[in-house]
Image (tube, rainbow, N blue to C red; front, side, top):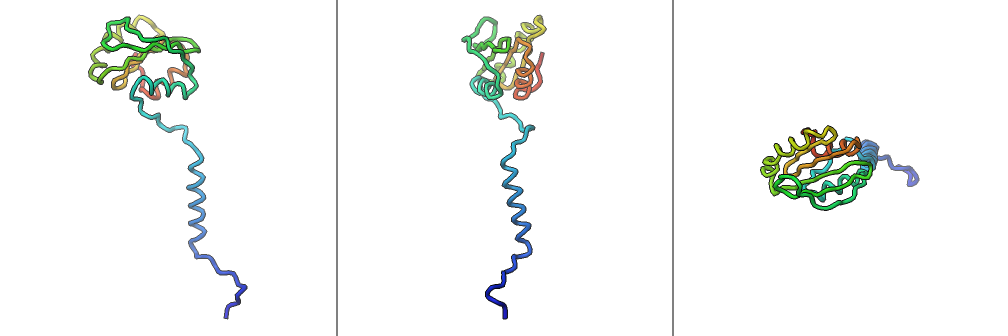
Amino acid sequence: MPSMLSQPHPAPHAGIVLLLVALVGCSSFTKSTDEKAAPIQDVNGLVEYLHDRGIAMQYDGPYSGTEATATGQVFTVTSGGQLFIFEYASGGDAITDMDMFQSTTGGRNEAKLWRREKLVVVFSGDDPRVDRALTRVLGSPIH
């Protein structure tokens, strides 16, 4: 007859379950550095994304000095350079203006051009952090 003081033996798989729970719990505390950036839908989302990456900018106002069919938003990047963000009603409208943007940025070596869906972005500056952040969220620059 077993004694009332004897310890019950755990189920054979209890240790494995406990180990798995501990590993899963610990993994939620780490964040992958290879995590893809959330898709950017508009000017505000892109500005917030850049701000979250430590890129300081000052809003200068609307820009409509080109033949673009959309009004752009101009930002001065504190580390140097200007960022022009154009938001179109659709991706097709953005594609329509791409020839104009490519000819406009073609003469300025430091200007880079990105397009993703309905956003067109021109960065005229030399801060590699801005280039990396824009490339990560918008893809490789067109020019």
